[in-house]
Image 1 (cartoon, helix red, strand yellow):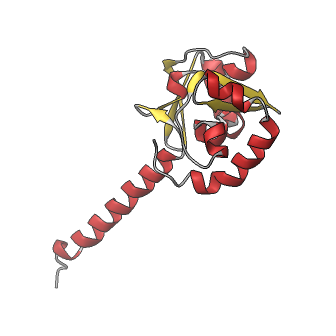
Image 2 (image 1 turned 90 degrees about the horizontal axis):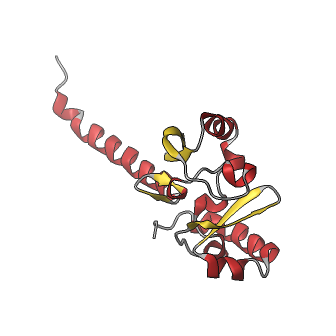
Length: 154
């Protein structure tokens, strides 16, 4: 007796749905615009150049299902060797927003590097508020992140 393919279709559909749902959940863990993190800015440059530097689609790496752009192959390779170190905290969502319990988008120029970690903020005004109590906001954001990362992207 030959098995019918129709018996496998419900299983295949359920598997495809589970995989697409997992992919969406993973993608929402990193803030991205059109599938690209940090609006296309180079995550490594924040540490080496101490400023935002636009990346290129010629030098890319994927981390947690999201594409990161880099200004050079060297930066891409540095990131690929230790993405947990160079990727922005809280998936690149606003660190202040995470401290407040929600996801918010970020702007590449609104950043702070603290204790060798990159934090992004919604805009320059929010960054100024963030900088009034960085340690306190980091503590709150760390406590909130497990819950916040499960929220849908803004």
